[in-house]
Length: 271
Image (cartoon, rainbow, N blue to C red; front, side):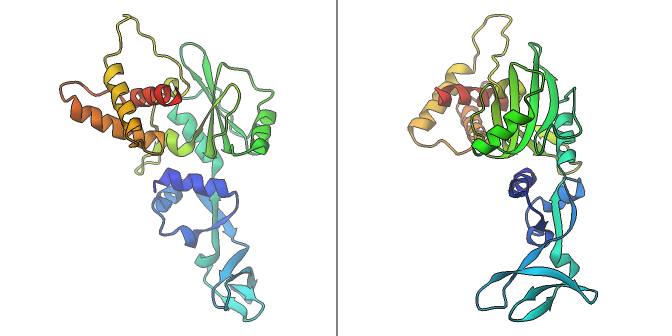
């Protein structure tokens, strides 16, 4: 699991989480180090594992010590590090996403509730507006997004970044955070996995009018993998697999960019 995948999971839970439960998770240290998670006091309950049946027990502070209160066993003391809680630092995430895509018209506070405008990106044919919402799983999430951005400037292209879910939104493209960016563990920067044009389905300009030399071989590889039930779950994993096959089968050609592969995947799989 990557740091961004872990962050998305934590955001999706929408509650304070015990840092002790995350201590061994890959990427947790980097998320804390670079400010994507922040301290949130203590959790409200812990699982009591000393009873015959495990149950949630309220965390209390008694006589200068943290612990949890069990109806059968009474007060069970625990260390402060066992009850320390963390929550996602969403403003830090929004700022980093805006930096990653060099956004203008940024907004440092939510539009409403949990919906944020990350900013706008000039695509040469107009602006694409980037939003963030923790979840796009159901009708309630869709309504919350529509309500929050109802007064925003309209754009032909809108990208909604979510931690979980990617329900269809009329006039917009939804993508999960872990499919959009990776985190540089050294400095915490977010690095886009592909260009916005490819994600939004905007055809690239071909000034010379020549056909794309990658089209035929990429299409053949993608269709063959689909026919042979080799297609992987997740655009990023499948794009890397397709690219590996291309490089193996066409060592004489310079390989296409990963964003080009994703674009062909979207066209062929969508069709």
